[in-house]
Amino acid sequence: MKVLHIFSSKAFAGLERHVEELSFEQSKNNNVLVIGPEKFKNKFRANYHSLDNLGYRFSPFKSSKLKEIFLNYTPDVVNTHGTKPAMLLKKFKNRNFKWVATVHNNKKNVYAYEKADSVIAVSKLAVTNFNKQHKNIYHELNWVDETRFPKYTKKNGKYFCFIGRLEPQKNLETLIKIWKSVEEKLVIVGEGSQEEGLKNLVTDLDIAKKIKFIPYTDNVGNILCHSKGQIFCSLKEGSPKSFFESIYCEVPVIATPVGAFPELLDNEFISSDLTYDSIKKVILHWTARPKELLKKQKNLISSIKKNHTIKKASERILKIYES
Image (tube, rainbow, N blue to C red; front, side, top):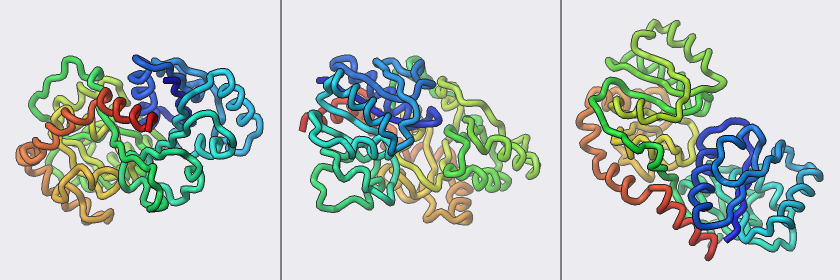
């Protein structure tokens, strides 16, 4: 099968790793090409064609470049990731390929996706606003690429952690303010637009001895192996890879009721809403009980290891392409 993946992004984060891991796994038994920004080319193991500024949705130039690629590559399936590529694909009529659109977050405006042959949603909440009569919506959560953890061994916990982009939707200001009342250490791993402001907040709250910042690393196993738990205070999510990697590495999770979290976690591990007091309540409760937290998520850990590896996810997605 000839598969073409298209994405357009400014930062290499969860969606981009989703495309990278999926395209490489599929390339083992299929002919796969990825179209994306030039700056990410070296991060991809599958065949890659650089095409910048796909975000300019109404550019005739970009549409003609894509048409040229379609004619030369003749894909059986085009899998778009995110709204910007979907807006471009929507304009193509008389397609000679199947268009599968992956939705990575909850979308208020789903206009871009209505012409797709099939939609893959990374969480049930991601397609809340889609037509309930749409028969070709498939639900496929994210996964773990086990090759990232070849010699992983869980060790004694020393701290709680957050691993991800330091951006407003992650709601890290709330996490830091709550941490003033927590008798544990916190390691924040990542980079982003809020990095300086978050570090200043830690200093202003006089909790620098409890909170440590570490730049993003591909070797997240070194962080997770000593973690008692990972905490997500997100205001918006899809199906975060960091969650699946955390659970795979036997690091339990505390989260907010967004994205795929309500599908995966029991209610006792999720704040009742997105208010400060609700998030604080669940964090204070479980950070004081790390052993119980781990024990209660043992079944989830087993399920993720069994059902949510990249190999099994890729097999399910290929079946969607063929359907």
